Image (cartoon, rainbow, N blue to C red; front, side):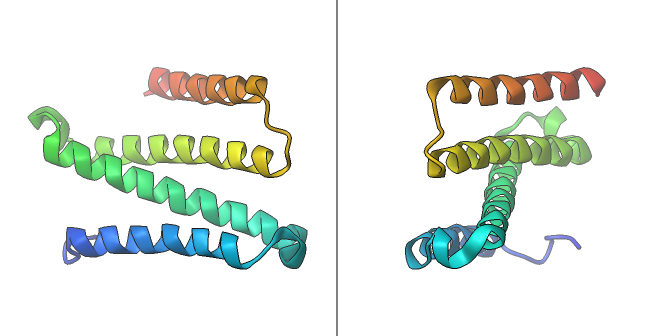
Length: 127
């Protein structure tokens, strides 16, 4: 599936709609009504929506404002955008989950950032 026939405005509208539906679901439901499986699925949905939106925004910005050499290598830009979107989305999801459990501490933030930086370092060293 390609996005050749889809306009930028509709992609942005879909992305904003998904994020808005996540925040609306936060306001409408509570963890007691969702149960453990529902809460887990909500966090997985949060990770997927945030990661895909961040990857899409990074890809579009690099393709529009990046250097000519980066714009020519689209496959590499797609993989980099997906990797960065997944990493940042995972970090935000972990921090939100720890915060919702009231277990978030300054050390946890540092450890999550260090883990994400380590994953990025090894991913760049491998490629």
